Image 1 (cartoon, rainbow, N blue to C red):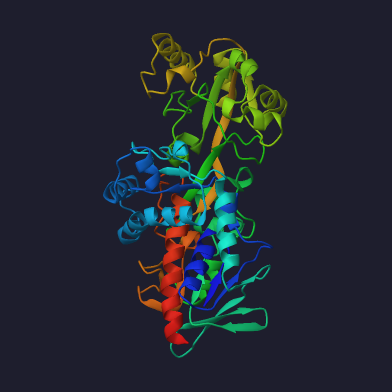
Image 2: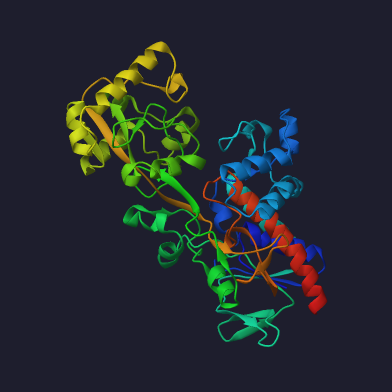
Length: 464
Protein backbone atom coordinates (compact mmCIF):
# COMPACT_ATOMS: atom_id res chain seq x y z
CA UNK A 1 0.00 0.00 0.00
CA UNK A 2 1.00 3.62 -0.49
CA UNK A 3 0.80 6.48 2.01
CA UNK A 4 0.98 9.95 0.49
CA UNK A 5 2.27 12.59 2.93
CA UNK A 6 4.85 12.22 5.68
CA UNK A 7 3.41 14.37 8.46
CA UNK A 8 1.90 13.05 11.68
CA UNK A 9 -1.07 11.35 9.99
CA UNK A 10 1.02 9.83 7.19
CA UNK A 11 3.72 8.47 9.47
CA UNK A 12 1.10 7.03 11.85
CA UNK A 13 -0.61 5.31 8.91
CA UNK A 14 2.66 3.91 7.55
CA UNK A 15 3.71 2.56 10.96
CA UNK A 16 0.38 0.83 11.57
CA UNK A 17 0.33 -0.63 8.06
CA UNK A 18 3.87 -1.96 8.38
CA UNK A 19 2.92 -3.54 11.70
CA UNK A 20 0.11 -5.30 9.83
CA UNK A 21 2.73 -7.00 7.65
CA UNK A 22 1.90 -5.06 4.50
CA UNK A 23 4.55 -3.65 2.20
CA UNK A 24 4.41 0.14 2.56
CA UNK A 25 5.71 3.06 0.50
CA UNK A 26 5.61 6.49 2.15
CA UNK A 27 5.81 9.37 -0.35
CA UNK A 28 6.62 12.91 0.84
CA UNK A 29 7.05 16.14 -1.14
CA UNK A 30 9.53 17.65 1.33
CA UNK A 31 13.17 16.66 1.78
CA UNK A 32 12.34 15.19 5.20
CA UNK A 33 9.41 13.73 7.11
CA UNK A 34 7.49 15.71 9.71
CA UNK A 35 5.15 18.04 7.84
CA UNK A 36 3.17 20.60 9.82
CA UNK A 37 3.27 18.34 12.89
CA UNK A 38 6.97 19.08 13.26
CA UNK A 39 6.27 22.82 13.17
CA UNK A 40 3.46 22.73 15.72
CA UNK A 41 3.40 23.41 19.44
CA UNK A 42 3.08 19.69 20.04
CA UNK A 43 -0.17 19.70 22.02
CA UNK A 44 -2.36 16.58 21.89
CA UNK A 45 -6.05 16.71 22.92
CA UNK A 46 -7.46 13.66 24.71
CA UNK A 47 -9.60 12.47 27.63
CA UNK A 48 -9.21 9.74 30.24
CA UNK A 49 -5.44 9.46 29.84
CA UNK A 50 -2.63 8.24 32.08
CA UNK A 51 -1.28 11.80 32.21
CA UNK A 52 -4.60 13.12 33.49
CA UNK A 53 -4.76 10.35 36.08
CA UNK A 54 -1.26 11.26 37.26
CA UNK A 55 -2.68 14.70 38.02
CA UNK A 56 -5.85 13.19 39.58
CA UNK A 57 -7.97 14.67 36.79
CA UNK A 58 -11.29 12.88 36.37
CA UNK A 59 -12.41 12.87 32.73
CA UNK A 60 -14.22 10.66 30.23
CA UNK A 61 -14.74 10.08 26.53
CA UNK A 62 -18.42 10.99 26.94
CA UNK A 63 -17.52 14.35 28.49
CA UNK A 64 -15.04 15.11 25.72
CA UNK A 65 -17.58 14.18 23.05
CA UNK A 66 -20.29 16.35 24.63
CA UNK A 67 -17.88 19.32 24.76
CA UNK A 68 -16.68 18.69 21.19
CA UNK A 69 -20.17 18.63 19.74
CA UNK A 70 -21.54 21.49 21.85
CA UNK A 71 -18.72 23.90 21.00
CA UNK A 72 -19.16 23.03 17.31
CA UNK A 73 -22.95 23.41 17.60
CA UNK A 74 -23.28 19.88 16.17
CA UNK A 75 -21.94 21.10 12.81
CA UNK A 76 -19.44 18.27 12.45
CA UNK A 77 -19.91 14.62 11.58
CA UNK A 78 -20.93 13.13 14.93
CA UNK A 79 -19.66 9.66 14.05
CA UNK A 80 -16.20 11.03 13.22
CA UNK A 81 -16.13 13.21 16.33
CA UNK A 82 -17.06 10.18 18.43
CA UNK A 83 -14.35 8.11 16.75
CA UNK A 84 -11.82 10.82 17.55
CA UNK A 85 -12.90 11.06 21.18
CA UNK A 86 -12.93 7.29 21.65
CA UNK A 87 -9.47 6.79 20.17
CA UNK A 88 -7.59 9.95 21.22
CA UNK A 89 -6.54 8.47 24.56
CA UNK A 90 -5.18 5.32 22.96
CA UNK A 91 -3.33 7.45 20.42
CA UNK A 92 -1.67 9.42 23.20
CA UNK A 93 -0.58 6.23 25.00
CA UNK A 94 0.76 4.92 21.67
CA UNK A 95 2.96 8.00 21.33
CA UNK A 96 4.09 7.70 24.95
CA UNK A 97 5.03 4.04 24.44
CA UNK A 98 7.14 5.06 21.45
CA UNK A 99 8.98 7.65 23.52
CA UNK A 100 7.17 10.99 23.33
CA UNK A 101 7.30 12.73 26.71
CA UNK A 102 4.07 14.41 27.84
CA UNK A 103 4.90 15.79 31.32
CA UNK A 104 1.99 15.86 33.75
CA UNK A 105 2.87 19.38 34.89
CA UNK A 106 2.35 20.63 31.31
CA UNK A 107 -1.24 19.34 31.13
CA UNK A 108 -3.62 22.31 30.76
CA UNK A 109 -7.08 23.42 29.66
CA UNK A 110 -6.28 24.22 26.05
CA UNK A 111 -9.81 25.21 25.07
CA UNK A 112 -12.73 26.69 26.96
CA UNK A 113 -13.50 23.51 28.87
CA UNK A 114 -13.13 23.15 32.63
CA UNK A 115 -11.13 19.93 32.39
CA UNK A 116 -7.46 19.99 31.27
CA UNK A 117 -7.11 17.93 28.10
CA UNK A 118 -4.20 19.67 26.38
CA UNK A 119 -1.20 17.33 26.64
CA UNK A 120 2.00 19.22 25.78
CA UNK A 121 4.97 17.30 24.41
CA UNK A 122 8.14 18.39 26.18
CA UNK A 123 9.91 18.92 22.86
CA UNK A 124 6.83 20.36 21.13
CA UNK A 125 5.77 19.11 17.69
CA UNK A 126 9.37 18.47 16.71
CA UNK A 127 9.58 15.73 19.34
CA UNK A 128 6.43 14.00 18.11
CA UNK A 129 7.70 14.13 14.52
CA UNK A 130 11.17 12.88 15.50
CA UNK A 131 9.76 9.90 17.41
CA UNK A 132 7.44 8.96 14.54
CA UNK A 133 10.30 9.36 12.04
CA UNK A 134 12.45 7.08 14.17
CA UNK A 135 9.69 4.46 14.27
CA UNK A 136 9.30 4.66 10.50
CA UNK A 137 13.05 4.04 10.08
CA UNK A 138 12.82 0.95 12.30
CA UNK A 139 10.39 -0.69 9.88
CA UNK A 140 10.66 -1.93 6.34
CA UNK A 141 8.96 1.16 4.92
CA UNK A 142 10.11 2.56 1.59
CA UNK A 143 10.39 6.32 2.14
CA UNK A 144 10.40 8.41 -1.03
CA UNK A 145 11.26 12.08 -0.43
CA UNK A 146 11.00 15.15 -2.65
CA UNK A 147 8.34 13.48 -4.78
CA UNK A 148 4.88 14.78 -5.52
CA UNK A 149 2.00 12.78 -7.00
CA UNK A 150 0.61 13.86 -10.33
CA UNK A 151 -2.42 11.55 -10.31
CA UNK A 152 -4.17 8.61 -8.74
CA UNK A 153 -4.52 5.48 -10.84
CA UNK A 154 -8.21 4.51 -11.01
CA UNK A 155 -9.52 1.33 -12.60
CA UNK A 156 -12.01 2.59 -15.25
CA UNK A 157 -14.25 -0.46 -14.87
CA UNK A 158 -14.47 -0.81 -11.10
CA UNK A 159 -13.60 2.75 -9.97
CA UNK A 160 -11.11 1.32 -7.48
CA UNK A 161 -7.95 3.29 -6.77
CA UNK A 162 -5.13 0.93 -7.70
CA UNK A 163 -2.02 3.06 -7.48
CA UNK A 164 -0.42 6.44 -8.02
CA UNK A 165 1.42 8.28 -10.75
CA UNK A 166 4.58 10.32 -10.16
CA UNK A 167 5.47 11.97 -13.43
CA UNK A 168 5.66 9.17 -15.99
CA UNK A 169 6.06 6.47 -13.35
CA UNK A 170 3.12 4.39 -12.16
CA UNK A 171 3.23 2.57 -8.82
CA UNK A 172 0.47 0.03 -8.26
CA UNK A 173 -0.91 -0.73 -4.81
CA UNK A 174 -3.69 -2.56 -3.04
CA UNK A 175 -4.72 0.69 -1.29
CA UNK A 176 -3.73 4.36 -1.08
CA UNK A 177 -3.89 6.66 1.96
CA UNK A 178 -3.98 10.41 1.35
CA UNK A 179 -2.42 12.29 4.26
CA UNK A 180 -1.03 15.34 2.49
CA UNK A 181 -2.09 17.92 5.09
CA UNK A 182 -4.14 20.98 4.35
CA UNK A 183 -3.95 23.73 1.75
CA UNK A 184 -2.75 26.72 3.76
CA UNK A 185 0.12 27.33 1.32
CA UNK A 186 -2.19 27.49 -1.71
CA UNK A 187 -3.77 30.96 -2.23
CA UNK A 188 -6.17 29.65 -4.88
CA UNK A 189 -7.62 26.95 -2.63
CA UNK A 190 -7.79 29.38 0.30
CA UNK A 191 -9.97 31.64 -1.83
CA UNK A 192 -12.04 28.69 -2.96
CA UNK A 193 -12.48 26.81 0.31
CA UNK A 194 -11.50 29.19 3.13
CA UNK A 195 -12.61 32.71 2.16
CA UNK A 196 -12.44 33.96 5.76
CA UNK A 197 -8.69 33.43 5.61
CA UNK A 198 -8.29 34.69 2.05
CA UNK A 199 -10.22 37.87 2.88
CA UNK A 200 -7.33 38.98 5.08
CA UNK A 201 -5.29 39.45 1.87
CA UNK A 202 -1.68 40.44 2.54
CA UNK A 203 -2.24 40.36 6.30
CA UNK A 204 -2.72 36.57 6.18
CA UNK A 205 0.15 34.15 6.40
CA UNK A 206 0.46 30.41 6.97
CA UNK A 207 2.44 28.73 9.75
CA UNK A 208 2.32 25.16 8.44
CA UNK A 209 4.52 23.39 5.93
CA UNK A 210 5.06 25.15 2.61
CA UNK A 211 4.32 21.82 0.95
CA UNK A 212 0.70 21.85 2.18
CA UNK A 213 -0.88 22.99 -1.08
CA UNK A 214 -3.96 20.78 -1.08
CA UNK A 215 -2.73 17.83 -3.13
CA UNK A 216 -5.01 15.47 -1.22
CA UNK A 217 -8.11 17.45 -2.14
CA UNK A 218 -7.33 17.67 -5.84
CA UNK A 219 -6.24 14.03 -6.04
CA UNK A 220 -9.27 12.81 -4.12
CA UNK A 221 -11.66 14.94 -6.14
CA UNK A 222 -10.21 13.52 -9.35
CA UNK A 223 -11.31 10.08 -8.13
CA UNK A 224 -14.82 11.34 -7.36
CA UNK A 225 -14.42 12.24 -3.69
CA UNK A 226 -16.84 14.59 -1.99
CA UNK A 227 -15.39 17.77 -0.44
CA UNK A 228 -16.88 18.90 2.89
CA UNK A 229 -16.31 21.51 5.58
CA UNK A 230 -16.45 24.72 3.55
CA UNK A 231 -14.85 27.82 5.12
CA UNK A 232 -13.47 26.02 8.15
CA UNK A 233 -10.07 26.13 9.76
CA UNK A 234 -8.20 27.88 12.53
CA UNK A 235 -7.11 31.48 12.32
CA UNK A 236 -4.90 32.94 15.03
CA UNK A 237 -4.93 36.61 15.91
CA UNK A 238 -2.07 38.94 15.12
CA UNK A 239 -1.13 42.64 15.34
CA UNK A 240 0.54 42.09 11.96
CA UNK A 241 3.85 43.50 13.17
CA UNK A 242 5.80 40.79 11.37
CA UNK A 243 5.31 37.29 9.99
CA UNK A 244 6.19 35.53 13.23
CA UNK A 245 3.90 33.66 15.60
CA UNK A 246 3.28 35.41 18.91
CA UNK A 247 3.73 33.02 21.84
CA UNK A 248 2.44 35.37 24.54
CA UNK A 249 -0.31 37.99 24.61
CA UNK A 250 -0.12 40.06 27.81
CA UNK A 251 -3.09 40.57 30.10
CA UNK A 252 -2.60 44.32 30.27
CA UNK A 253 -4.00 44.82 26.76
CA UNK A 254 -7.62 45.99 26.61
CA UNK A 255 -9.51 44.76 23.54
CA UNK A 256 -12.28 47.03 22.26
CA UNK A 257 -14.47 46.93 19.15
CA UNK A 258 -15.42 49.90 16.99
CA UNK A 259 -18.13 50.81 19.47
CA UNK A 260 -15.34 51.29 21.98
CA UNK A 261 -16.56 48.43 24.19
CA UNK A 262 -14.75 45.44 25.58
CA UNK A 263 -16.22 42.19 24.29
CA UNK A 264 -14.06 39.35 25.68
CA UNK A 265 -11.54 38.35 28.32
CA UNK A 266 -8.36 39.36 26.54
CA UNK A 267 -6.62 36.22 27.86
CA UNK A 268 -9.22 33.82 26.44
CA UNK A 269 -7.87 30.77 24.64
CA UNK A 270 -7.06 31.03 20.94
CA UNK A 271 -9.59 28.27 20.29
CA UNK A 272 -12.35 30.89 20.41
CA UNK A 273 -10.54 34.24 20.18
CA UNK A 274 -10.39 34.60 16.40
CA UNK A 275 -14.06 33.75 15.96
CA UNK A 276 -15.14 36.34 18.53
CA UNK A 277 -12.95 39.04 16.99
CA UNK A 278 -14.18 38.22 13.49
CA UNK A 279 -17.77 38.73 14.72
CA UNK A 280 -17.04 42.36 15.65
CA UNK A 281 -17.84 45.19 13.25
CA UNK A 282 -15.08 45.32 10.67
CA UNK A 283 -13.87 41.81 11.56
CA UNK A 284 -11.08 43.12 13.80
CA UNK A 285 -10.57 44.95 17.09
CA UNK A 286 -8.11 47.29 18.79
CA UNK A 287 -5.73 46.55 21.65
CA UNK A 288 -5.56 49.62 23.88
CA UNK A 289 -2.81 50.54 26.37
CA UNK A 290 -1.20 53.64 27.84
CA UNK A 291 2.30 55.10 28.00
CA UNK A 292 3.11 53.43 31.31
CA UNK A 293 2.41 49.99 29.88
CA UNK A 294 4.34 50.84 26.73
CA UNK A 295 7.45 51.80 28.66
CA UNK A 296 7.33 48.78 30.99
CA UNK A 297 6.37 46.17 28.38
CA UNK A 298 8.70 43.21 28.77
CA UNK A 299 8.67 39.46 28.07
CA UNK A 300 6.72 37.11 30.28
CA UNK A 301 9.13 35.33 32.63
CA UNK A 302 8.39 32.06 30.88
CA UNK A 303 9.91 33.42 27.65
CA UNK A 304 12.45 35.90 29.03
CA UNK A 305 15.58 33.79 28.46
CA UNK A 306 14.52 32.61 25.00
CA UNK A 307 13.77 36.21 23.97
CA UNK A 308 17.10 37.47 25.31
CA UNK A 309 18.91 34.72 23.41
CA UNK A 310 17.12 35.61 20.19
CA UNK A 311 15.43 32.22 19.97
CA UNK A 312 11.94 33.70 19.81
CA UNK A 313 10.46 37.03 18.81
CA UNK A 314 7.79 38.82 20.83
CA UNK A 315 5.37 41.54 19.78
CA UNK A 316 4.42 43.08 23.10
CA UNK A 317 7.77 44.33 24.36
CA UNK A 318 8.94 47.95 24.59
CA UNK A 319 11.51 47.65 21.80
CA UNK A 320 9.06 46.19 19.29
CA UNK A 321 6.28 48.63 20.18
CA UNK A 322 8.72 51.50 19.61
CA UNK A 323 9.64 50.07 16.22
CA UNK A 324 5.99 49.67 15.21
CA UNK A 325 5.19 53.23 16.31
CA UNK A 326 7.44 54.35 13.46
CA UNK A 327 5.67 52.11 10.94
CA UNK A 328 2.25 53.38 12.00
CA UNK A 329 0.99 49.97 13.11
CA UNK A 330 0.93 51.29 16.67
CA UNK A 331 -1.49 54.24 16.63
CA UNK A 332 -0.86 57.06 19.12
CA UNK A 333 -3.23 59.67 20.52
CA UNK A 334 -2.47 62.45 22.96
CA UNK A 335 -5.97 61.97 24.35
CA UNK A 336 -8.52 59.17 24.22
CA UNK A 337 -10.67 61.32 21.94
CA UNK A 338 -7.78 61.71 19.50
CA UNK A 339 -7.13 57.95 19.62
CA UNK A 340 -10.81 57.28 18.85
CA UNK A 341 -10.62 59.55 15.81
CA UNK A 342 -7.50 57.90 14.47
CA UNK A 343 -8.91 54.39 14.92
CA UNK A 344 -12.43 55.08 13.73
CA UNK A 345 -13.88 54.13 17.12
CA UNK A 346 -17.17 55.69 18.24
CA UNK A 347 -16.41 59.09 19.84
CA UNK A 348 -16.62 59.26 23.62
CA UNK A 349 -16.79 55.50 24.14
CA UNK A 350 -13.23 54.75 25.21
CA UNK A 351 -13.40 57.06 28.19
CA UNK A 352 -16.41 55.23 29.65
CA UNK A 353 -14.95 51.79 28.94
CA UNK A 354 -11.57 52.57 30.48
CA UNK A 355 -13.07 54.35 33.49
CA UNK A 356 -14.90 51.15 34.38
CA UNK A 357 -11.80 49.06 33.62
CA UNK A 358 -9.63 51.20 35.89
CA UNK A 359 -12.24 51.07 38.66
CA UNK A 360 -12.26 47.27 38.40
CA UNK A 361 -8.50 47.25 38.91
CA UNK A 362 -8.93 49.28 42.10
CA UNK A 363 -11.65 46.87 43.24
CA UNK A 364 -9.45 43.85 42.48
CA UNK A 365 -11.80 42.20 39.98
CA UNK A 366 -12.79 42.30 36.34
CA UNK A 367 -16.54 42.80 36.74
CA UNK A 368 -17.27 42.30 33.02
CA UNK A 369 -15.19 39.36 31.77
CA UNK A 370 -13.46 38.05 34.90
CA UNK A 371 -9.91 38.33 33.65
CA UNK A 372 -7.22 37.59 36.21
CA UNK A 373 -7.01 40.98 37.92
CA UNK A 374 -3.32 40.52 38.69
CA UNK A 375 -2.64 40.74 34.94
CA UNK A 376 -4.54 44.01 34.53
CA UNK A 377 -2.89 47.44 34.40
CA UNK A 378 -4.58 50.86 34.47
CA UNK A 379 -4.97 52.77 31.23
CA UNK A 380 -4.74 56.40 32.37
CA UNK A 381 -1.29 57.78 31.50
CA UNK A 382 -1.21 59.67 28.16
CA UNK A 383 -0.32 59.36 25.40
CA UNK A 384 -2.58 56.40 24.61
CA UNK A 385 -1.99 53.67 22.04
CA UNK A 386 -4.01 51.28 19.89
CA UNK A 387 -3.06 48.36 17.69
CA UNK A 388 -5.51 46.73 15.29
CA UNK A 389 -5.80 42.98 15.88
CA UNK A 390 -6.72 40.69 12.98
CA UNK A 391 -7.71 36.99 12.81
CA UNK A 392 -5.21 36.43 10.02
CA UNK A 393 -2.65 33.73 10.82
CA UNK A 394 -3.70 30.55 9.01
CA UNK A 395 -2.94 27.75 11.45
CA UNK A 396 -4.80 24.96 9.69
CA UNK A 397 -7.51 24.32 7.13
CA UNK A 398 -10.49 22.07 7.78
CA UNK A 399 -12.08 21.61 4.38
CA UNK A 400 -11.30 18.17 3.04
CA UNK A 401 -12.35 14.79 1.73
CA UNK A 402 -15.43 13.19 3.21
CA UNK A 403 -14.58 9.96 5.04
CA UNK A 404 -16.38 7.38 7.15
CA UNK A 405 -15.27 5.97 10.51
CA UNK A 406 -12.95 3.54 8.75
CA UNK A 407 -11.34 6.53 6.95
CA UNK A 408 -12.58 5.30 3.58
CA UNK A 409 -13.05 8.21 1.18
CA UNK A 410 -16.65 8.72 0.07
CA UNK A 411 -18.06 10.11 -3.15
CA UNK A 412 -20.89 12.61 -3.48
CA UNK A 413 -23.46 9.82 -2.98
CA UNK A 414 -21.66 8.65 0.18
CA UNK A 415 -20.53 5.49 -1.59
CA UNK A 416 -17.05 4.20 -0.70
CA UNK A 417 -14.30 4.80 -3.25
CA UNK A 418 -12.60 1.44 -3.03
CA UNK A 419 -8.87 1.47 -2.36
CA UNK A 420 -8.79 5.11 -1.18
CA UNK A 421 -8.39 6.31 2.41
CA UNK A 422 -7.60 9.69 3.96
CA UNK A 423 -6.53 11.04 7.34
CA UNK A 424 -5.57 14.20 9.18
CA UNK A 425 -5.94 17.69 7.76
CA UNK A 426 -6.70 16.24 4.32
CA UNK A 427 -10.16 15.26 5.58
CA UNK A 428 -13.24 17.36 6.26
CA UNK A 429 -16.10 17.45 8.80
CA UNK A 430 -13.88 16.36 11.70
CA UNK A 431 -12.61 19.78 12.72
CA UNK A 432 -15.43 22.30 12.82
CA UNK A 433 -16.09 26.01 12.78
CA UNK A 434 -14.66 26.23 16.29
CA UNK A 435 -11.34 24.71 17.24
CA UNK A 436 -12.14 22.86 20.45
CA UNK A 437 -8.70 23.37 21.99
CA UNK A 438 -4.98 23.13 21.51
CA UNK A 439 -4.10 19.63 20.32
CA UNK A 440 -7.26 18.97 18.31
CA UNK A 441 -5.28 18.89 15.07
CA UNK A 442 -2.53 16.51 16.20
CA UNK A 443 -5.05 14.18 17.87
CA UNK A 444 -7.00 14.16 14.60
CA UNK A 445 -3.85 13.29 12.65
CA UNK A 446 -2.72 10.48 14.93
CA UNK A 447 -6.14 8.90 15.53
CA UNK A 448 -7.28 8.79 11.92
CA UNK A 449 -3.77 8.15 10.61
CA UNK A 450 -3.61 4.98 12.71
CA UNK A 451 -7.08 3.87 11.61
CA UNK A 452 -6.26 4.56 7.95
CA UNK A 453 -3.09 2.49 8.20
CA UNK A 454 -4.91 -0.44 9.77
CA UNK A 455 -7.92 -0.36 7.45
CA UNK A 456 -5.97 0.26 4.25
CA UNK A 457 -3.58 -2.55 5.14
CA UNK A 458 -6.52 -4.96 5.36
CA UNK A 459 -7.80 -3.94 1.94
CA UNK A 460 -4.31 -4.02 0.44
CA UNK A 461 -3.91 -7.53 1.75
CA UNK A 462 -7.15 -8.60 0.07
CA UNK A 463 -6.24 -6.94 -3.24
CA UNK A 464 -2.74 -8.39 -3.55
